[in-house]
Amino acid sequence: MRKSIAVGISAGLLVALAGLAPAQAAVTAASASPGMASVSVLHAIPGLTLDISVDGRVVVADFMPGTLLGPLKLTAGTHTVGISAADSLEVGGSANGSPLPSIAVSGSTTVTVTANRSFTAVAHLTDAGLPAATLCNDDTKPLAAGQGRLTVRHVAAAPAVDVLANGAVAVAGLTNPSQAVLDLPVGTISAVVAAAGTTAPLLGPAEVTIAPRTNTIVYAWGSLADGTLALAVQTVSTK
Image 1 (cartoon, rainbow, N blue to C red):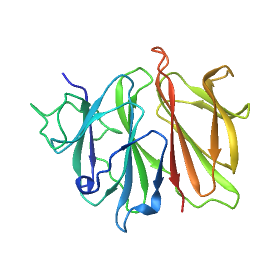
Image 2 (cartoon, rainbow, N blue to C red):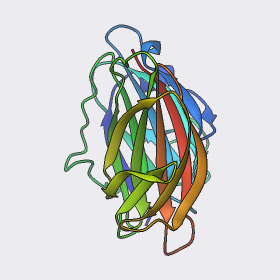
Image 3 (cartoon, helix red, strand yellow):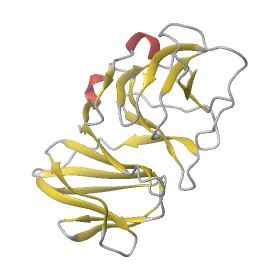
């Protein structure tokens, strides 16, 4: 049986569907027209190629781990997006068979996105290694002069982690699927992800740029037990 994640999102998806992009990609909050939301999708399940369908029709085939789809411009209304193990269906084809079993997002398959806001839907593993989906709110509130924003999201099959910036703990005890948001001086930091209470890197060090009027989002994804931990970076413009 194919694994599937069903997420209810807006009817504008088919009209505004964008192509695949590398995991480090930019999202402009203002790119959505008035009355629309901006939504990206991150594939963070290692070793699994996905198909994405809308109302039973495949719109993206062979979605590879570590890649970002979008941003998509979404209007009012809800449709069902199925994220399932790829079966070589072509874009525009039909999803075969019975409705696929869904993994609820925050206890529901219906997700409400707010106009003029930015969101990222993440297909990822739980801390126990099971497939899941989380809808994240991308913080686009205005920043003070000389400040940028750093968001760290833990979506890996791994215990709680600490995030160190330039050798000092910036985020402590972050658990899957939580996030931490920091406003920091513009510049470059050396980031390390370590098991909570330790400093030995599980990921990194990685150079992360804190840019003005930008929310830089860093994801720890993959599986610690399987040796597939990795970082993905996304940037979202603030207001």
